[in-house]
Every structure is written in structure tokens, then in C-alpha cells.
Image 1 (tube, rainbow, N blue to C red):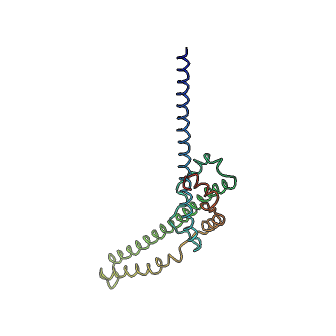
Image 2 (tube, rainbow, N blue to C red):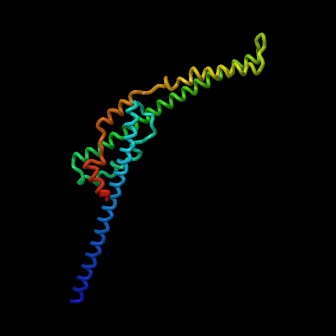
Image 3 (cartoon, rainbow, N blue to C red):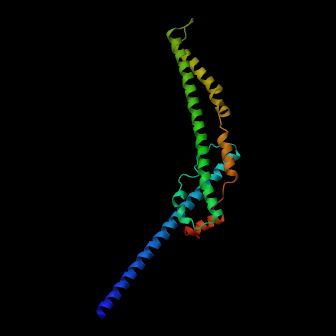
Amino acid sequence: MTGDIIAMYIQSGVTLIAGGIAWFIYEKQKRDAKELAARTILSEIQGGEDAVAKVRDAIQKDHLDIDVSVLPSESWSKYKHMFVKDFDKDEWTLISDFYNKAPLIDEAISFNKTAFAGDVDQIRSNRQRLLATYAEEAVKQAMFPSEPALSTEEIKDIYNKKYEAFDILYMDKQAETQYKPVKPVNDVKMYLADFPRLTTSAAGIRLKKLAGLK
């Protein structure tokens, strides 16, 4: 009887220890996952703020001809449930505001690139069409010569002069006449007016602690 009681106590102790170890492992895994999530979010925010600095420089020159992305990846929606108890309402709003506005800036930059690409395609199309017309005229001149007939070299010379004149009158003016959409620039100016600066804020400092960096 006594042996059974001792065995029961031993079994209970083993179960308790095993349960304690399992709980410790679970809590550690949860902390590690939270720390990794915090680091991921912090990295996105820091990268986004660096990109925003470049966007501000471009906007000061009234253009968006830049190759940057403020938010190439977004992890806040995936991990924010882990931090419900860590940030107060203002801090939560500040982080959410960053993740809401960053994609809007990226969309404006993308739209601006699309407009520029459309310009380039149209310029290329116009150029090829006109040069094809010049070539057709040269072929006609060779097949149905006027009086006096022109030599092949003279016909080539006429074509080359038309080509050079086209480059001077049309191609060289593209930088001045290029269509620059105003809406994306104005939109980004609006987004940047109150774009949150997170890394030095109370929310950023707390996020760094959660990431195990401070």
C-alpha cells in the first residue's frame, strides 16, 4: 500500500515536471515568435522610412521619377494580433497609419511609372512610323527616279538628313514636352503631410524592446 502511494506521488511529480517543461517550451516559442514578428515589422518600418526620405526629396523637385518602394512587404496585418496588449490606442493608430499610407504612396509611384512608360511607347511608335515613311520615300525615289536621277548615295544622304532633322525637332524636345501626371504627385504630397515617423516615437521604442533590440 505504501509502495503504491509512493509510486502515485512519483507519477504525479513526473507528470507535473513534464507539464512544466511543456509549458516552458510553449511560452518560449511564443516569445520567440513574437520577437521575430516584432523584428519583421520594425525592419519594414525602417526600410519604409528610408524610402520615404527619397520620396520627399523627389517631391520637393515636383516629380516622382524614382525607383523605390515604401512597403515591398506587409506583415502588420499578419502579426498585429500578437501586440494587442503592448501598444496603447495612440501607438496602435500610429503604426496602422503607417501601414495604411505606405501602399498609397507606392501606388502613386507605380501610376507615375505607367504614365512614363506610355509616353516612351508612344514616342517609339511615332519615331518608327516616321522613319518608315522616310524609308518608303527613299525606296520610291530609287525605283522611280526624278529628273535628273539621284544616285543611291544621294538618296541615302537625303534620308539621313531627314533622320537628323527629326531627332533635333522631335526627339530632343521630349524632355520638355513629356507628359507628367499631376495627380500622383499631389496625392503623395498629401500622404506625406502627416506621414508618421515611427522609429523615434514611443511606439517605435516599444517595438524595438519587443524585438529584443533595446
